[in-house]
Image (cartoon, rainbow, N blue to C red):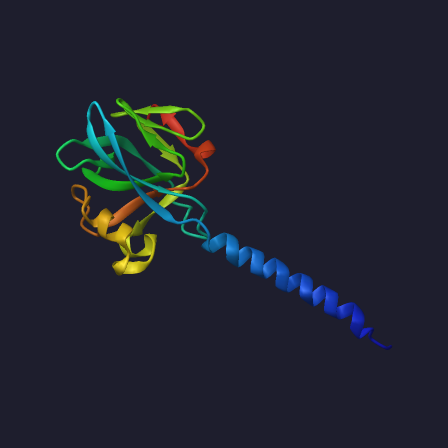
Length: 166
């Protein structure tokens, strides 16, 4: 049986194109640090677009906590007495009463949230220790956060549940 070499090359090129697209999607989307001025104070908000392959099975949950003395926005887990700096989906903004997601849903300070995501070391979030964003996240260490982790929500705000603790 003779193999048609012209037939194999288009298939191989298709595999390479798909692989390039997967690599691009897994690396796209960077961390952004934004400053917001509201009637309740000055706030640092971390957002991220894109997504990360793996590490998302844990889920992220807690109570939104806004620390006026530092301007940091945390995700507090009262049952463990720990607060993590939070990285929200891109398009999230700070309001006078809490946060507003890109789809318009409001999250009030003190409200319970749960969504896809994970807990990562600051160095894993973006660019390593030299990253400006990683340095900013280190300015918001949280309480009881002995490993210096960050609560990073998945970029899909649609998966974010707001309200009662489940």
